[in-house]
Each structure stands twice: as C-alpha cells, then as structure tokens.
Amino acid sequence: MAGWYPVLFKLDGRKCVVFGGGAVAQRKAGGLLEANADVHIVSPKVTPALLEWSSVGRLRWTAKEAEESDMDGAILVFAATDNPDLNRRLAEAAAERGIPANVADDGESGDFIVPAVLRRGDLVLTASASGAGPALPVRIIGELAERYGQNYNENVEVLRTIRRIVKAHVADPAERRVLLGAAVTDEALAEWRAASWLGDADKLIARLRQLAKRTEGTDT
Image 1 (tube, rainbow, N blue to C red):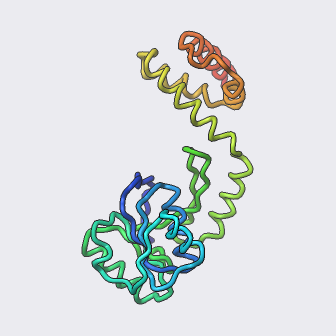
Image 2: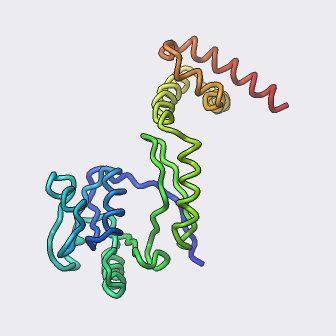
Image 3: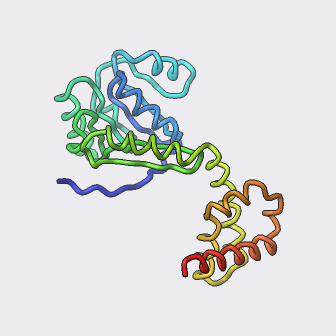
C-alpha cells in the first residue's frame, strides 16, 4: 500500500491543468477554483457548469483533445477523462516532466489523491481513505459540517488577530502555546464572537491567562 503525506498546496494564481470535461473534471476544477488556482480545462466538450465558468473568465477551456504540451507551465495535472488508458498516459507524461498528477479513475496510481473537503473560510478540514474510495470520507465531512458551522470562519479571523497579539506581547514560547490553546476552547470561542475589546492587547493577554488557569484546573 502506498504511503500518503497530507499537505495543503498554495495554488493562488498558479496553473493547474484538468484533462476532461465531465462531472469528475468539474469537481476537480471546482476545488481548484476555491483555492484560486489558474485552472485550464482541456477537452473537446465540457459540462454546462464548466462552460459557464469559462464564459465568465473563472477558468480557461481549450476545446480539443489532450496533448502533452498542454501541461507546459503547470504545477499540478488532473487526468480526469472518460478514457482510463488516456488518463494513464497523461499521468506518465506528467511524471516525465516532474509534474505531480492525479488520476481520477485510479487514485492510487497517481502521485496524489484529493480528499473530501469542508471549507469554512480559511478553516479547511479534509478526510481521506487513502485511495480506498470517497464514500467514507464524504460521510465524515458531512458529520464535520454539522459540528463546524459557518461561524467558524469568524473564529479563524479572530484567532488570527489573537495569535498576532500573543506573538507580539508574550516572549516565552511555552506560554504562547498555553495561551493560544486556551483561546480555542468552546468557552473562549463563544466569548470572542461577542467581544469588542480584542484589540486591547493587555486586556486580551490577561483574559487568556485566566482561561489558561481554568483549563489547567479542569485537567487536574
């Protein structure tokens, strides 16, 4: 069994090529658009959604059969045609060029697999069965969606501010970890959503220290 290393790629403005124009290619392209990638679709035909995204400039569609030269300048390749042999050849061509490739109909044969994803703004949760199929990861992501609602996007923005303040005003790395840990308890997250004083560094640090002591007391 292949070993997989989970990672998030920064794709903003970077070329990613999707070979194929069907429902699978549409899902791949949709995920790439959420990451602000420069998406190129290569396929004689595409779904209505892909056609619309192309018409409004969200992605680029080249209406033709796949060629190896279509990969020029790409950092990721997705072989998502309805022809398994073509997908395999495209993945091999990408490997020769040193470009990681995902093979839609046989994920384990590619260089990477795409997990099920839940996005709450900058909070990104993923689940994968390491190529064993999407059913279980999709179920898990559905459960996570119920647990982590849209308000978690606000939480991420607030925690970014808190982290910046803690890093600027707390010199001890160990204390920083404790305070940032206290900042993500359920009690703290609820408090931050209603707080209007988060920009007050002294008040914030003092409150975090109170929460940290309370958390330590709970642990013991």
